[in-house]
Image (cartoon, rainbow, N blue to C red; front, side, top):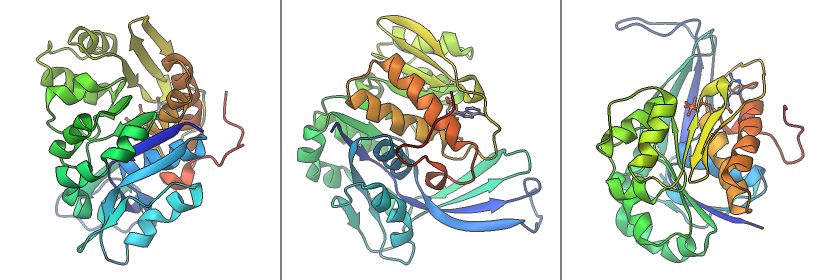
Length: 298
Ligand code: ATP
């Protein structure tokens, strides 16, 4: 089985269903509210495991009542949680508001994720070094993400989400760098590239700046995949979207599982688009991810 290690965040999501988004100074009555497991790292680990990889999660939760909630679906998906540290203080929290159009806003309180220090990362070096693919995001400190590069992963997938200021070495170590349109433009700026916004221009700019390969997700339009072999467009199946929370993470995790198993980036991205499209038909992040064997949309 292909081995994937995710170094990143674990959160509990407070998922609010609203008729419309709140304005400053307002009080709104939500039509629903639930606590569920989330965090970009944990979402991606969950997706990679459900997509067939042997996954180890490296990160931290607090010692509060949220900690077991943050790890329930990871445990169910078979993710190895031995390297998730339990630190004193609060588990990460994300307040996710979804309006009637399915449009979401997210506020993240880092909690224990902020205490994933470079020293903690160094302790995971043997696990990182043994993985076929290591996956990183932007919800732990940038210095800790950079420390992962020093642990010499065989192949590193970097998802610059949310956008944080990272060292250029981190972006240049990515193969692929996975970004949406906004994150791609920000990454290009961090590499000193031109101020462009068209997806094809941003992807070309990132490659010209020295990034080995780039996958840009484009929502319902699928993804652009760029590597030394050229740039191809990967479509996403047409589905009726209900809630896109965690779709980008589902894409990244599924991509990591397939790349670790030896698929080309294009083939892995085509699978990831189908996997992610499935998830937007249901509410929640990890809760919307398909169990192994589920028929995915074409
Ligand atoms: P988020 O932050 O909400 O997780 P993102 O901006 O990181 O999202 P997107 O590009 O919106 O990521 O979506 C990731 C992938 O999910 C897309 O490449 C696509 O495969 C799938 N997807 C998202 N929205 C839709 C949709 N409406 N219909 C079909 N597939 C979708």
